[in-house]
Length: 222
Image (tube, rainbow, N blue to C red):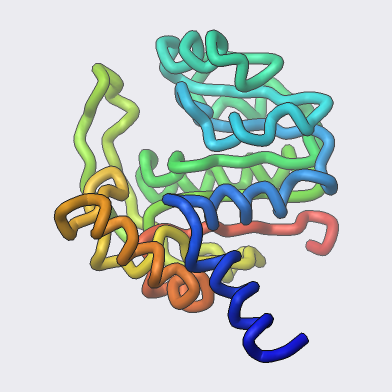
């Protein structure tokens, strides 16, 4: 393959993409084809798994906010739902019940000690893979949508996951370019989004500089 073809492939895959496309593609690559069942902890009303849940023979959503459960159910994202305290999920399912256990934009809603409890529980439930998606460092967020669980209580760094055997990739571009709810800081938003996307190849490879982190642990290799 010529250098120009290699460059074109790189641009098509990582630069000439839509908002959050790299995240959704990376999530799909981590789960689809290798995992047949998935537990989505803190699934919310519009889990990113909505794009790929049809690929699993068993897809289960769990959340502590009943309104989010009902919205997700209405959207048909998962096959099965449970409304409960997220730290109690391990008591509801047997160890190694799922190929994959994911928590996407969830762990930052716990104090740090409870966040580690969540990780331990997820690792005990997963046969193959655990996936975490969270802001890089502490990102303030208050209650919204009448949901007290939306408050951010902790910040997570690359080393928090690497010390537990996770592979970490940066997501959503260079950290200074995004703010609350991952919205672009630079206005107009369309320009800010495009500038952030242009920095994704850098952020993916150097996650300590990214706005968000995607951490994956292969349990079979642990």
